[in-house]
Image 1: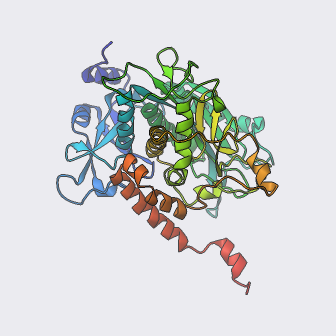
Image 2 (image 1 turned 90 degrees about the vertical axis):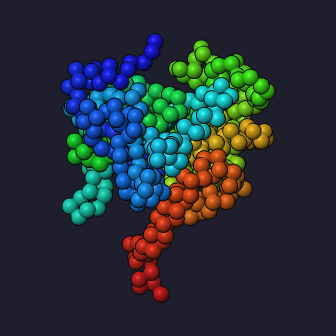
Image 3 (image 1 turned 60 degrees about the horizontal axis):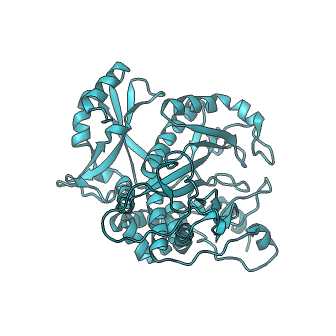
Length: 470
């Protein structure tokens, strides 16, 4: 069946009371940006794009004058859908263009370039994203804390009383996300006070990234309506677990390969993870008889992630605060799931790479990442592991935190701070080239400035420890 024409889409939107389109794109920091466009102007926004001053957007690298000074956000018509929390407004995802060409510093374009590499093989990249987040609120003095003052359990995972107290927020999320086409799976209170997780069905990688950005847009609006702040800060509370944004990854071979020779790593006949892939393609990374339930290809993909893990940290854990989460630290709840060590294990949550049901869970990303860039880099690293036929990582079958506590030698660990992660990305020329040199140049420039700004601050901890200490 052919997709509806743009005029048919516009007529349908008018019938639903839509008068404006919220044309959104994602800046380098992963933050949704955009503007309201009258519905009548939608054809031009699709063909040419909604215009923005390029230098006003983080990370475009565009000049202040000339044909390429305008960031043109071209609406993707298939993404149009009414926003239930903004009556009369439809949401649209946009691609970044400049000077009539795709913008190489647009993170959505960066991910699309990676996915084009897969199409040449006849493969599809499926991703399930697990959003963890905090509901925060500043007090009268502007100090941030959890929005629910009664959320104080030492071990708050799955706390039903907190769910009851915050049911208004959760139920509004359910209503709005369902109206937006999300297939919800579960909602729960996570392992830190004020922390929640909402899970929904996986999708093809680009659609999954688009959906996560729409999730964030929805959560910000709903939290504000309930007097709280939806926070993607990875580690807002010392002594409590932080928030991850775990990626569940699988590949399927969905069509006959193009003419000519190409390498196809072996895989077994285990069904692909979940919905769209089932029944329409071979699972590339799954093998029930293989180590950790992975095929040779899956093991090579995992090896690529571990091989590039230090550089991937910069893109998947891109803030100063990210490394407060990625630390060997005590948790008030007695549990921490932080993936500190570069290891892989079958259903082992203490490892950076966890295999489960024939797919790979990549546990490094946190919710402060630019999801398009993090997915593009993750895919590039995994494909590099397959191309180089890297040896399979040795399966880890022990609790790495217990091993660390016993004083035994440990696997190599991730960078300890953003500075070291940025240095690793700078040194990994292969990954930077695969992700996109222009995007990585902008990313490194902005993130180095972020680190420098942090390094010049004097914290309360320093004053407490040193002001009268010598």
